[in-house]
Image (cartoon, rainbow, N blue to C red; front, side, top):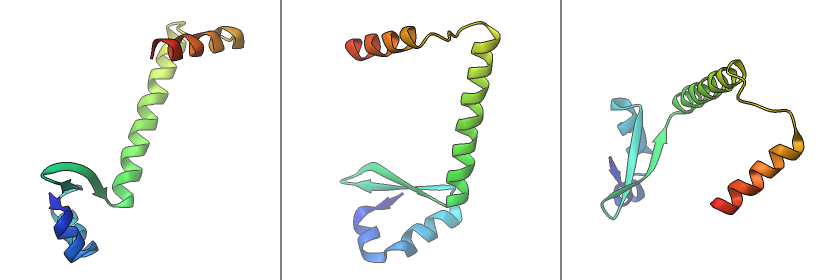
Length: 85
């Protein structure tokens, strides 16, 4: 973990040092982790995993018949979700 003050003083070198030891580096502000820094390769890896999981979930929903093709129903469900939020 890097403090915001350390980042302010050392700049990107503090992040680079942290990333040599970890895949992600948390940046704390007032003692609480608030931000995360990572390499673009790690970000792309994480993003690809999210997309793969989402694709798998959608394909499973299709397989189980948990979908519809009605735009009217779709918009109705969105409106309902907004009302309940």
